[in-house]
Image (tube, rainbow over all chains, first blue to last red; front, top):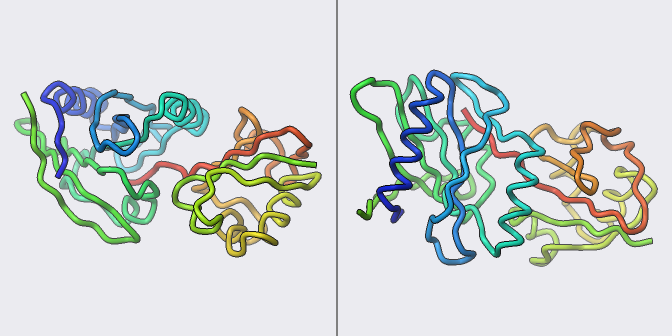
Length: 135
Length: 90
């Protein structure tokens, strides 16, 4: 289960909408071991593509070091799909490399609604989980 | 000669859970080879067909080695090498 504040949910959705039609991506950091997403970190999509995303490697180093200094970990890793459903693609699954993260997929394929779903991805297996939004 | 190597969560199965290991070598390639001698299987996660894997980021101190000399990048005592799997997808 992913428990996330309304504020963070809104920030992810706004980021995805802003970058549409390119894929948006980012991290929400939280205290190590807590599973609590707290600190919103939108990332540059170095691919700037409607079908692919990649964190800029230097930015990733700086963000990962900062999380380490603050005893945080990436609780949520999010990205958007701009023309397909909010479900992990084969590339999403093969590159998922943070076993403890909640992988949030947002879809901006429709103008009227934004799909927001969350998954665990472990050893190539995807398990969808419920999302609980806290107001 | 000791070079500190920071290992990401997903590769700690090769280091008995250690977040950090030490190694030696004059270049990144030699360092990885040295690590492989104590952490069997680690090299194949970093190198494919003689080059660094595309979706693994390796940094020498603060710089991605892709902007230096890749596997030929010289390393020395006191350096820190950090490995982070790229975060990417489609």
